[in-house]
Amino acid sequence: MAQGTEPDGPADRLAPVLRPVRAGNGFEEALEQILQVVRLGLVPGGGRLPSERELAQRLGISRVTLREVLRVLQDQGLVQARRGRYGGTFVLPRADAGGEDELRRRIAGVDVEDVLRFREVLEVGAAGLCAAHGLTAGQAARLRAALDRTRDAPPAEYRRVDTMLHLTLAELSGSPTLAAQYAGVRATVNGLLDCIPLLVRNLEHSQRQHGALVEAVLTGDAEGAREAMREHCAGTAALLRGFLA
Amino acid sequence: MAQGTEPDGPADRLAPVLRPVRAGNGFEEALEQILQVVRLGLVPGGGRLPSERELAQRLGISRVTLREVLRVLQDQGLVQARRGRYGGTFVLPRADAGGEDELRRRIAGVDVEDVLRFREVLEVGAAGLCAAHGLTAGQAARLRAALDRTRDAPPAEYRRVDTMLHLTLAELSGSPTLAAQYAGVRATVNGLLDCIPLLVRNLEHSQRQHGALVEAVLTGDAEGAREAMREHCAGTAALLRGFLA
DNA sequence: AGGCAATGGTCATCACCCATACCTTATGGC
DNA sequence: GCCATAAGGTATGGGTGATGACCATTGCCT
Image (cartoon, rainbow over all chains, first blue to last red; front, side, top):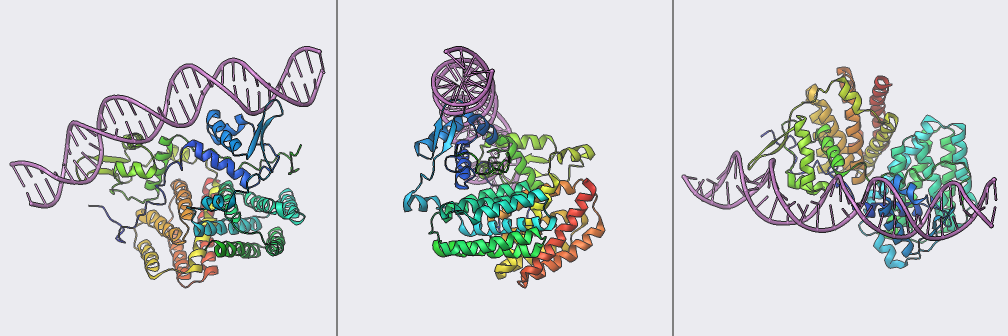
């Protein structure tokens, strides 16, 4: 009694909330996040990760566990540790080239539709927020600088600077939660993009959209910014749906 | 060397990714999620939570730890356990009335702007997605049923059925990630709403907006759905900003 | 040349939490 | 009236990871 207020059948209304409290053990989650930093290009090849003590604190895990993660990454040739003052853990440039198998395995279990939809919602929302509440002079400069960097970037670096531009917009939205969620979903998207060829023609198209997007954001044209971003996302989405279908 | 590719100063680009791997220990996170279920009204007063064994499995924690959580909730008079077959853990009706202090303390440390912005992005995005890709007959019926339930709901129940309506829309967006994120942010919003008075006048206004929103979604008018949802969110946001400023 | 300071590398201890099994209670069906 | 069943209540052993201190190495600065 006092049981069902939802006579819709056995649909599980609790599903969105009662998800596992941790995706895995601390080790796996930390590994995933460090991989995110690398995949997003937040630390470029040759760059240095924060020190072990700082990383451990920011990830909320012990240094022992963190070191196990770094050990694995080092064994796989992704990073290299150097001791002594001004030492640290350095990201090695482009050591992946993981072959079809590795790439395909990485996208197993990814709900592509979920990712693409969620990504579009966040991006369009961020663009709209930025345009709607306006940017300070400093913020506008940051956005313009990020856009400029995408212009004169070699194809090999394009993915990275493109990610930076979008991440900048997400940060400027004024919602740290949105920025964090975007970082996560974008890392997944980058993983998917690694599985398909890079078409130069798309880059040019992408560049035009970036220009229109930033223009709309800076002039406070919220609807225009949303529309530009929607098109931009639709392009990538069509590409991915086509290749991964 | 090979250090900074970002000469923008010490801005922390890693912040969105390097968040703590767990918000607290398993106990705290599980407690938070069960409280979410209650705050969202997913299990109404008098309703029964899933059995301890099922809950533990779905939260990915041991039954021992889960029982510690339930023990706390029981001590606080939020739930009550009944033994025997057809027993279980039952949510007690409205036992909070936690006084100003309790409420104010619960919203301490909540970034209100972050929450409101993130919420709007998710809601508007969900509405747009639903309208854009259309709903099956069954999904449309589910949405209409949720809307109907908000009409003839007593004020005391309004918060709950309203949450259900929005959560339904989020689920129908086709992005489970979006639905899960919305559930989380909505629980926070409900926590904030508990701190301010309930105005009947707002309810009527809200109802009209719900009607327009569902209408737009069902007719596939994406832009209209987004705009309706934007207005709807702006209303709540203004209310909360006003009272919590 | 010497030392300081920041970094990676190592270890012992301990708290938390999980897995599993079993007991107890209440309800419905035979 | 009995018993099967599903739920909460309890006890034990083991593993993972956090804490904190310490060592080893390196490069800049005095």
